[in-house]
Length: 330
Ligand SMILES: [Fe+2]
Image 1 (tube, protein in one colour):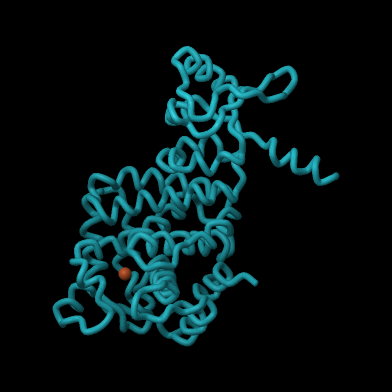
Image 2 (cartoon, protein in one colour; image 1 turned 90 degrees about the horizontal axis):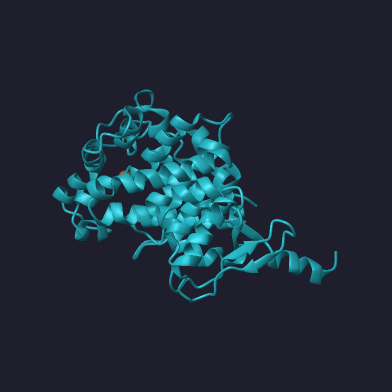
């Protein structure tokens, strides 16, 4: 195939949109065109003008045509749709997962999770939990059905240290281990239990004042005590939502426990730590080591994995091996 023809094909890649998606696209100032497909010829023509208000008669016609699968956007316009898509992830995934390329869908999911986690970590948990949960549920469903999308998500993780970025990295790397690092795929419910624990194990950190979180060294005894209590705070904070299973809550409580009993808050040993608790612990340590924060050297993936292998008395070696499989790809 000659290049000109190939370029034309890439240029002419379209995704159909449903009336539910049309509902949340702005009707004035939409920066790109909606296209109408002629069902007889399969050709596309512009149904709207970029930047121009869609008048109400056109709105009604387009709305009806969406239901007949006749209205499309260009694949190359998906980046401009991201702000609208991220806020409505459930609809986008259920209506478009089959037509958006994995690479673009990975970007939308990571951004949507970031937005939902930010609200949770920086604003009221009670007010924002439901939105976070439905975003995570929609993302979880898509990734569970199409595990390869994880390979597009991992390179998008932001290494700059913040509670939100750490939560996203924990969740996505942990999801990779659940889907690619073990034999057999978990059922959807246990996959969701794992995601919840991975994403939310540090939510209790929000109860700490910023100045404690920002400190790297010279924490007072009281500050150390408060930090070491954050797994308990996480469980307490999340208990008010009443949506978490005991498996998730237990893993959150255990994510700083270590196999030799040197962890916290209870100092229990390997046989008393659940598999999910061990997974959250190993992933959380790996992410903490590889994040960039002021005054601390950030480790490369290889160095962090080596450090974890060296401390095999603290972490489950099978989990570290699975972590290597997911994070280190030549
Ligand atoms: Fe933690």
